Image (cartoon, rainbow, N blue to C red; front, side, top):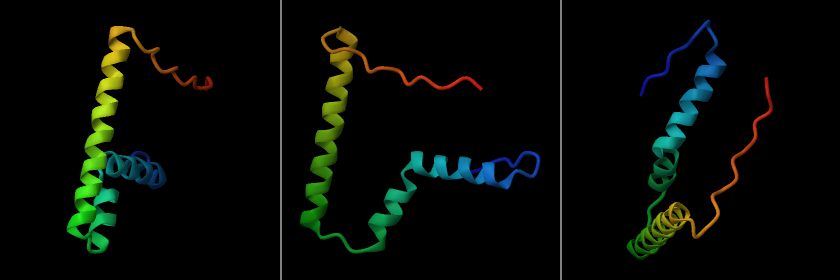
Length: 79
């Protein structure tokens, strides 16, 4: 993973790096590897993740078909 530092602005580069790591799921993986996870707990977690993914996919499909209203877009203040 690579982040460019512009104008010696290390703080901004660090923020970008953290966001990239968050998106890649590295923090979740670090937390998972920090302690032993019992096989039964792993099965329960993976099943819950699969259910969450399936519900999200179904919700997006219903929104595309017009059966559910689309989520409201966040309004960002002008700079």
